[in-house]
Amino acid sequence: MRQIARRGFVAGAAGVVAGVVAGTAGAGEAVAAPQTVPKARTGGSSGQAASSHSVARRELRGMWVATVANIDWPSAPGLRAAEQQAELIAYLDEAVDRRLNAVILQVRPTADALWPSPYEPWAQYLTGVQGQDPGWDPLGTAVREAHRRGLELHAWFNPYRVANHTDPSRLIPTHPARLHPDWVLPYGGKLYYNPGLPEVRRFVQDAMLDAVRRYDIDAVHWDDYFYPYPVAGQVFDDDATYAKYGAGFPDKAAWRRDNTDKLVRETAERIKKIKKNVQFGISPFGVWRNAATDPLGSDTKAGVQTYDDLYADTRGWVKKGWIDYICPQIYWNIGFAAADYAKLLPWWDEVVRGTGVDLFVGEALYKAGDPAQPAAWQDPAELSRHLAFAAAYDQVRGHVYFSGKDVVTDRIGTMARVVADHYRHRVRPPR
Image (cartoon, rainbow, N blue to C red; front, side, top):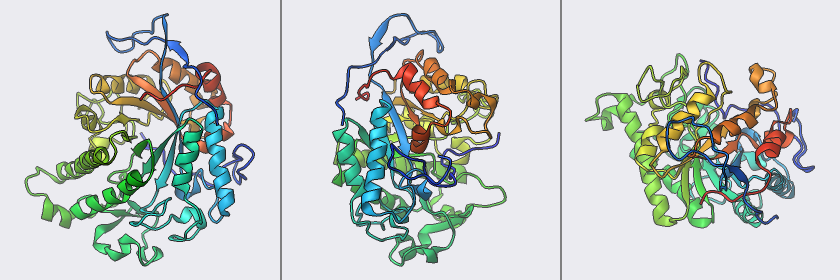
């Protein structure tokens, strides 16, 4: 199966957001009474139909707002501070209008920051110039305004990506990657921090945790990038690092997975030491391993497996209780042969059972109405069917939609259908 990354860049800027965001490409309310939903099973085999009884249930209803390459926000670099703020507020208002309760805002897209960080430069996606002060505090504003509207604000960080090019000279002279060139490796047309270096793991934790200390965020959120996705014909050249630190591991793959494990475990511990109430959630690619690779894996034939290709043992993190929630990107339609939504969701339901880790499902709203996608995605009811299917699984505690501009533009009315069918009232997140 051809791997289609959720975070793939989208050409052009976002569409009009609540009458505020100017589009250049095709595209404070109190929490009300809880939604009444079918009572999900509490035992028995996966897939058992929901009973006819109804209960009020908390659930996460979120949307990702991506800042890298100005995918969602700001709609373009170099807008005036007031315009940036207005666009951000419009996204928060849109979340309220759609009866969502969480916004996952990307605040560290490429080893930079959307707050005044002492560790890393201001993101270029704000002013168009890396390191240039935008004249306001986006993260601080987002937290304050989200909470005013009854929304959670999850701060979304990318741990290792440094730049979407391979030229260090394009980074500002004070960038940590310029000051520590030995930390950086080029791969697949991008620059990455080397996950095998202990000093790198410590630094990226320090940089991210600065936001935890300074702001009342509700969660630290990571996406699917750990070691980079495989690029045919290219090698992630960490041989020297492996020679230095890999003693005692059976192979480089095991050593790489241990590096990622260390980052996850150490970050989880440090978050709770700073603020016990801040959650730690990860949104990985939807397939841990195929069953043909590992009998514990899912009944899929995915071309990418996080355990083997990204060196991320996502199932293990859940089983060890290192994270508070997992939000797998189950970005395929019901019936998709290589990775069927109706097979992956039950698999994840069983993975989290008994662990205390919440399961939220990442939904590919961006595919709805895209003519390049399979026929199922041309049906406005596809995602509504996902939620109806998920209601029979009691470990599923919510859904998150990629991405913000697709929530707004709603190309074929898919999001409107989800709201009409499943989000009749606002509800609180599952705290």
